[in-house]
Amino acid sequence: MINQLDMPERVLYYWARLFSSSLSSGQNYSELSPSIMISILNYPLFPQETDNFHAVFHLTVDKEHFIWSPHLEIHAIDLSQFMVKWKKYRREMKEHSPTELPWLMLAYRCRLPEKRCE
Image (cartoon, rainbow, N blue to C red; front, side):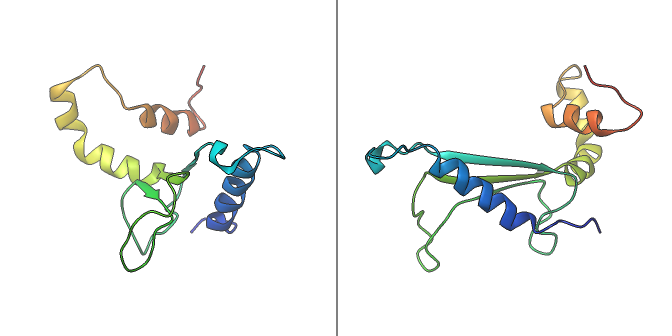
């Protein structure tokens, strides 16, 4: 298992910095811009909770599950799970559109040491 270096907390910290920097002193809170954090990882962030390669997080109320604010959105994309899903569905995708590759496939390809992306 790769050391995740407290990644959930790091993502939340950097999201908070991004969000707080979108408002200057004296501005109204209604002027805050939504901040979307996208983390592209090479390992599952929550391996016991999900096997999806793309997880989207919002701050919600526990019981009724409504969103606190649409200004907070965090995406975690796991390239290793993406490759598992990609290999499983590659044949079907080729039949429908043989020249199209999802952009995540390109990101995965660029991380391989023997490949060079330009």
